[in-house]
Length: 142
Image 1 (tube, rainbow, N blue to C red):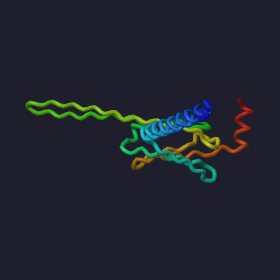
Image 2: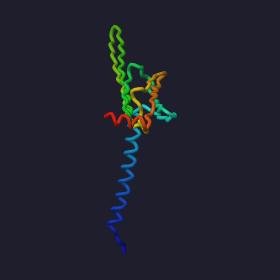
Image 3: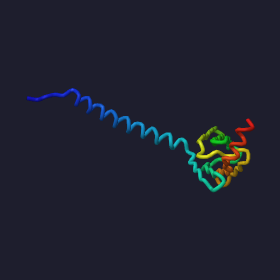
Image 4: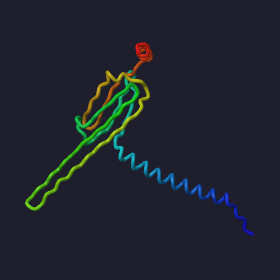
């Protein structure tokens, strides 16, 4: 005689659902990571943090940077317009490209003395790290 265990069936269904959701969310995550399109690297170099962001296709005037003592936000926005016209044809194309990324930094920085440079599609931010003494002084003055 055949013995049916309903809980075993529930376990099988739950396992299939988990696998389906895992596959679905990994595909969605892949899509968003390609849309994000701004690889960033943070490197600790002795007394400063060096943050690099790759922004190919953007110009210096397209980019905005916001620094706080523990975070960096980079946004780039570019609009392009191309127009073609002949006797019987008119074509106007508009394209917008925008990326934004914000991260929390691993150390406190002196955002007022940070240096920002943009060269050949790479944004480089050099921000001096705050020492424990500097942080205590700021706390006392507030």
